[in-house]
Image (cartoon, rainbow, N blue to C red; front, side):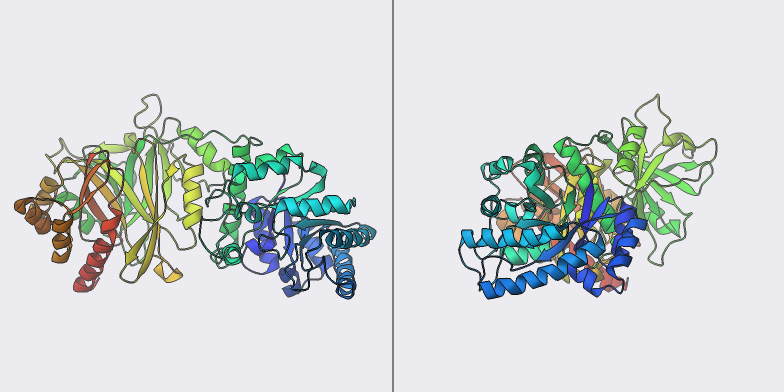
Length: 602
């Protein structure tokens, strides 16, 4: 299907928005009136610019407070409309959006509304324009799509149809029964379809709409279910995004437009009108790669954790550190910022690396070029929204080339270690404007399942976190973001290591010279009140800085190393079927990290 996006969904000047939409692969745009009014280009120049970019102008919007008003007011509205229709002819677009009135002058009179909209449509027809009438969820008298359609049906004019908007419909009701009436609207009378998702919030619907809309698949609405009803009615126009979002309006237009178009590709897949390559769900974490200008601090940290440097890349300054099935690459090659060590790449075990890469590319993930010699294993890699490189690996598939073949052994045997078994999860801090994009990316491109979003209190703000996982927990990635642009990079990323016994692992780490993050005594006083521990057990936890959590499935014990650059490690022990991440302990951990940072001057 054709795809379109309203210019209000993107940041920047009108020309920047048009360029971003074209580069992202959209077929058309909706021109939002404020964008046109603020542009130095004439309507003819905007039309030519869109044509040069391969974009059609699918809609001009909005016209407000038109119908069901006193005759004198309606006469003024027609004069205003005539000017807009002439402008649309200059733009080269043939459909205008008319929102249901919120004017205090509007009367609760469907007959009058239908008669005036019919007159408006008659005038529009003279200019070759169609009128798409939309019910605003906060309309004064018309606030549902059924009501808007009854008025359009009563008016019975060929140049008058309806516009369906997923936000205005789904913000009022999520009951699937309330959508069935869409199929009764003749497809040719659905002149336009606007799409937006939104998080499920209890707030004034106007403020909800103006600030918190997001792209389909990023919120809590069943946008796909609504689209299925619209398509079953016979609608064959574009799928168009109209998203009012404070973050999107401040973020760079190019990446936002790509995120937007990806959301429509995933939506089309969900409703069965597009078949991109099928998802290839990863089966495990092959490695985590740290890049650093100085390998000594991170090497000392890994050594204390019980890792051994087992291999080195044949042609690159990359060392492989391993313990159990946990593998860490330490790369000293790339130039880095002054803040040093960072988690730069993740290797994902995949049953079909090429298929995973095809899926990623089809959903607009940037494919990363890779410098390699003829002997190096071919590794497909794409970039996540935060810039993390994702490598699709086949270490467990013997018939496919594996990344580990690029390394030569550096140690005859592995040491006993501290009981680390594997990488339990990875925590990635997102740029503040990429959080929703990151969630959709990991769900759609990698086939991971998203858990509920949680808010975590930090001493200097509020963090938002959401985990994406495989059903069996073999891959767990926790995505987090700060509350404002200033939070970019303020919080380190971390690698959580699964252990058989976190007490043994923590003691072994400390005995090897490692520094554990100390937790305040108040935390353990509260822990003693909430759970039953022996005195020795609680004293051990306090001594080692071990935190504790419990849910219906099991128990969770975890502790943290000091931070090196922008990375720290977490030692975790999951008992039973515990599937969380100790979220209620996060405020204590964050406060302890701020304290440790202040003490070290880091």
